[in-house]
Amino acid sequence: MLGLGLGEAVPYVVYGLAGPAIIATAMYRSAVGLLFIVPLIPLYVILDKVLKSELPLANNTIDFVVLAMLLGMFLQKHDDDVPALAPSPLKGPLVIFVGYSFVSLIIGSTNFDGFSGEINMLRYANWKNYMIMPLLYVITYYTLRERAWQKRLFSFLFVSFLVADLRFKQSFEWVKHTHYQGEKSRIGGLAFLGPNEMGAFHAIYTLFVLGLFLVDKNLKRRVAYALLLIGGTYCVVYSYSRGAYVAVILTSFFIAFVKERKLLIVLVAFLIFWKTIVPLSVVERIEETIVEDGARSDVVTVGGVQLETAKRTEIWDEAMGYFYENPITGKGYNTYAYLTGWDTHNVYIKFMAEQGIIGFCLYVWLYAIAFRSGWKLYKNAHEELIKALGFGFVCAVVASIVSNFFGDRWTYFQLGGIYWVLWALVDQYNARIEAEAVASDTSAGASPIEYAANNRIAS
View 1 (cartoon, rainbow, N blue to C red):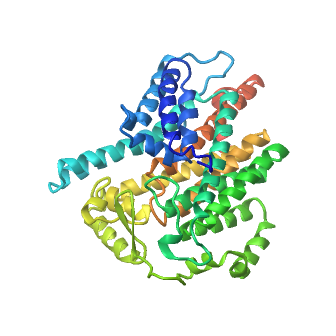
View 2 (view 1 turned 90 degrees about the horizontal axis):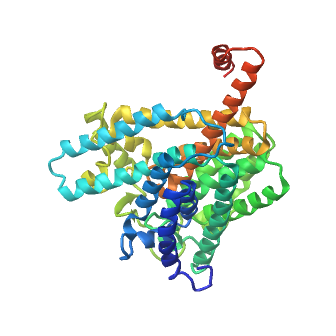
View 3 (view 1 turned 45 degrees about the horizontal axis):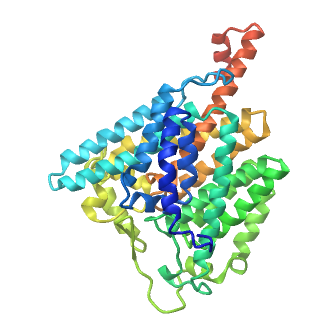
């Protein structure tokens, strides 16, 4: 790892630390579990080696940490000097979203007699892994409350992202990339997920960091942001993911319109002269030109699921056919891949085919709530760093919306885990600001009911 020859030892170190981390999480602070798991997400290849090892109970490491965090959340007492929080504003939507996804899972199991017991067990395991992300939101919202622990988490994430960027750079240097050579040119960094997913990951979180950089003027933190922007941009560029490129461009236009109008000039100039700016191999990727040997493959495999890269419209047509057969509820959660052997290569179409119009609307609803939460914090926070958190999260939401048009960037833990943690912190600070406003307003003579009415009108 990083040229130090530690690559083989690191998974064993992580496994060795997991036990003490689980005990500390359950007995001392649930936040310990977050500090253990979340920084490993950008380095998921390490965590994947632990999960796939033959060490005792290693394959349940994430589950045990999450269970320990839940146990700690209910058993541990909060510090008296930390203000109590109102219930999460996402409580209702989460119950609906999680509940319907489970119903959809049952629908998929009951509708297809051809699904073997093994397939249904895999589907249930995939659903369980998917639900870890909303659980992370709940755990983060209620347990990661002290600023000191939040700073520790972001410090660990900073180091983790830097290591992931350096690891990608070292791996990529072994590949000849003067010209684009199809899959030979592409490096993944998220275990069984491929370079498109890796590109989306770095696009989403690099744009989050860009949002922080544009709002937070603290010099030391801006240096840290700049390092992450350089590393993340390098990873996005050489992921050769066209979906990641589109996410970066469209989100940058969004930023330009709502925050930095001067950025429009840079973007327009880039779109005009991009062929002279980006590396030749990237130009060839975008133009679908492979100079050296081998024809472009139309099929890649991600996590055991085949992804069509050239004939997506045929897959979309087939998926929409499943939607028209069951427009209300769809075929059932996580059924399309087992029915066809393919992925839809578009999460919006995937939700429609598998969970119908109900699941699709719930998914879009979550994006609307997330965007509103980030924007609300950006506009209402008085502290610059907290405003930056809100705007950065808005950028991540927009980037995620765009990225999911090109593949599944939503249901995989290594792509969405950090997103849900950030969302929880955004909602947590919104709740604190609202509580402070209520306290201030009531002390000035207004009743809580009058304040709530005025606040609804203002928002």
